[in-house]
Figure: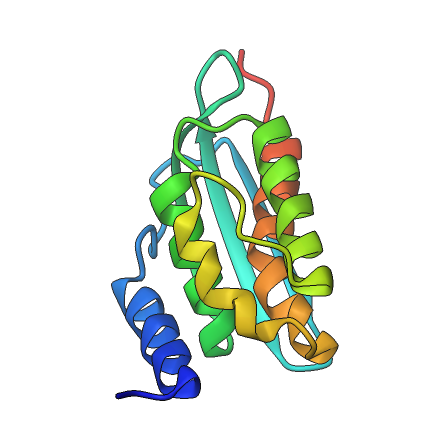
Amino acid sequence: MPTAAEIYQQAIKSLAAEATGHGALESPSGRAVLDNPLCGDCVEMQVALAGDGRIRALAHDVKGCLLCRAAAAAIGKHAPGASLTDIEHIGAQLTIMLREGSPAPADWDELAVFAPVHGHPSRYRCVQLPFEALAAAMKRVDPQP
């Protein structure tokens, strides 16, 4: 029977390997690049928003650790159709999960793989950075003519 550490590692590796959303958009309406100078993670998020402000398409490019890449892949799976309010809410729930060990946010079941990060504050930002980059990209949308 695998240990909890083995299950955690395989789940994170699998999610990161899926790399859902990795790449670039042809004509993004918003873009943000954020980094974590403490560990070297760098996340670029690009979004195309629908007229109602919901994510129509997104793409990410992550140069960083396994946790950061896996978090971006979870975003790639779940963020299309979400509003800025939705993304900020999920990001806040993720922060609570990491800090307090609470359950993963509903409807984002992949985030449960980050539960073992609780208790390792130096790794929280690795998981949070893609969410912060997505919210920043959504706020930096070029006005449409």
